Figure 1 (tube, rainbow over the protein chains, first blue to last red):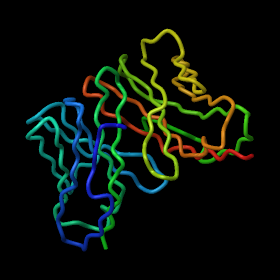
Figure 2 (figure 1 turned 180 degrees about the vertical axis):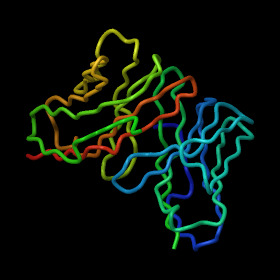
Figure 3 (figure 1 turned 120 degrees about the vertical axis):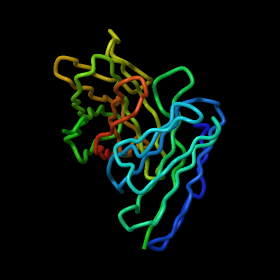
Length: 112
Length: 114
């Protein structure tokens, strides 16, 4: 159990719609991350946060926004969805005592 | 420039044999860490093993070991005594700096044959 929950598991959006992907952790860790994955490819960092009220851009932030009002929650917002945002989205938290990250189960998003 | 390179898109291995997955990395930061993750067909990302740049010994976790060659900038994963359940995609990743962001390679698919 990675201690990270993501909702929804699946979602189909129409072009131009908006949505929020939810992520919550139960380990009270400051460091949280959002990644996206192309099928059969590696993950790319979208945004990350090192504590409540602190967020920063990763490698591919365009088209996304995040907020971190509490330690537990780290939602990812898509505005004006485009087909190029069709990915599996993973939220992760850093380990309490180590360097590794633990991932949520992912949200599979399709934009058509 | 690519930070993590995995050159083997797919590999087949016989059950009970060992398999080595290649990973090379590029960084100028003296403090970094290397990770391996497993992604089975169900899609979840499972942490396997970690090696810090200052660690003197190669990391091991059960049947997983990381062959860390700092001068060659390589961090190969060795899976010993392969099992059918090892069939999955394997990703090498690196963190640099204090915010622990990860950069991932493209992955290697491993198929274990009975």
